[in-house]
Image 1 (tube, one colour):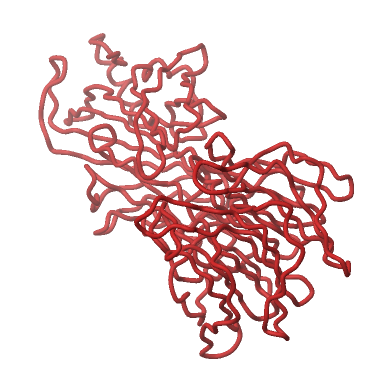
Image 2 (cartoon, rainbow, N blue to C red):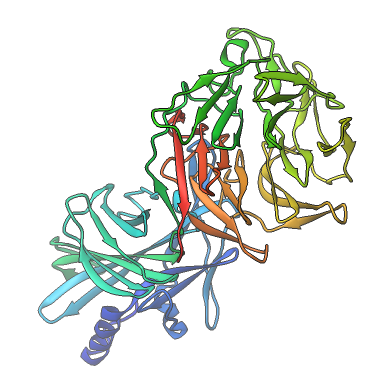
Length: 539
C-alpha cells in the first residue's frame, strides 16, 4: 500500500501532518463513475493530491432484490487530474476504505484511517446503511424527519455515542456531538451538497511498517446531495382499512374514498380465499366516520378503479380459481362495470376486447385510457398486452378503441393524466426486469414519447402509484419516495418521503388537493392497513 511520506526529514513530515489535518477522502458520483477526492470538503477539488489515496479500496453495494445485496470491488484509474472507478448500474451505495499511515502531531503519534460513502439514489428511503463493520466500521447514514436531517453514526454496527460530527454546505457549517442513539440533527438551509464527516479516536497502540503509534484516528465522510423536502405528513382521523390489501382499485369521489377488491392473502401466492370482492366507502370529512360496505361484485386483484362525472368505473383484474393448497390458476377478466352512488349498484358495460390485469387506467378529457398489463388464462398461458385502449365516457354507446401501439410491454405500471397528457410509469417488462421508464401519450398528436426516468435504484419503479394533484404529477414508490414531475416536464424532483413505505398501493388526491396513500405493502413489514395524508409545502 502506498504511503504519502517516507523518512525524508522532519520538514517533509511536518508538511504531511499539516495536509492530513485538513484533508479527507470523499466520494463523488457523476453518471456511472465514482470520483475520489482528497480535499477539505466534497465540493473542493485538489487533483494534485490524488496519488496519496490511489491505493484506497472502493466497493459498491449491489442491490439484489428482496433484501439481498452483494459487494463488488471497484477498480480505480488514476489519470493526470482524476481518480475514478466505473460503477455497476445496480449499485445502491459506494464506499471507500484506506489506511493512510502513521502521523505525528505534537506529542501524539496515531494511525490515520479514512472511510467514505455516497448513496447512489437521491431518494431518502433508499439511504440504507451499508452495515459492514469490517469494510466500513464508522458509518454515517442520513434520514429526514420533516425538514430536519438526521445523521446516524454507527461504530461496528452499534450507535456511536459522543462522536464528533462536522457538517458543511447547504448553508451550514457546524460541529455536533452524537446523542445516546448515535444521532445528530441539522437543518439544511438550501439545496446543494452537504459534506459530512465523523471522527472516531481509539486509544489503542500498535505498530505499522516499523512505525509505532499510540492511538487510531478514523474519519468517515458522507457526500450527500440535498433536496429539502417539500411535503409533510399530516395527522388525520381516518381509520385504517379493515385489513391490509395490495393490487386493489381505489378512487375519490367528492369527499368519499372508495376501495374495491385486492389481495389480502399470502404474499406471492394467490388463491380464491385470499382475494377480496368487498366494495368499501368512507367519508373523509365526517366526524367518527367508519368503513361502509357497498354492493360487492367479483373477486378481483390487479384491477383499476377511476372516477368520472360522479360515477365510478371498474376495469379488468384477475380471478384466482385455485384453493390455498393448489397451484395457482389465475384468469384475467375483461369485465368493465360502472357504479352510480345514487343507485347503489353496479352496471355491466361493454367488455374489454380481452382479459387484462396488472394494468392501470386514467381519465383524460372524458376518455378512459387503459394501458399495460397481461392476459392470464390459467397456468403457463399468459400473453403480455401490446395494446393500449381508450373508451369515450361522454358517448351514449361505450366502445373500446385501440390507441397507436405504445411499443412496450409492461405490467405493474401506474397510469396518470396530467396537463392533457397520459403518463405510464415504471413496471416490469416481459423479460422480467423492473424498470423506472416513463412513457407519455399525447392525445392531440396520437404519439407516444419517452418521458424522464424516475429516480431510484433497484425495483423502485415496480408497483408505483401516480395521480395528479392540480397541475402537478405525483408518483409514490416502494421506498416511500414522493417524486414530482418538474414544471417543464423534464426531470423528476424528489419531493420527500412518506412515513410508511409501500408499493402496490393507491395514491389519490383529495378534494382539497392533498395526497392520500391507501393500503399496499412493504418489503420489510408486509401488507398495511393504514392511510397516510400528505400536503405540499413551499420551499
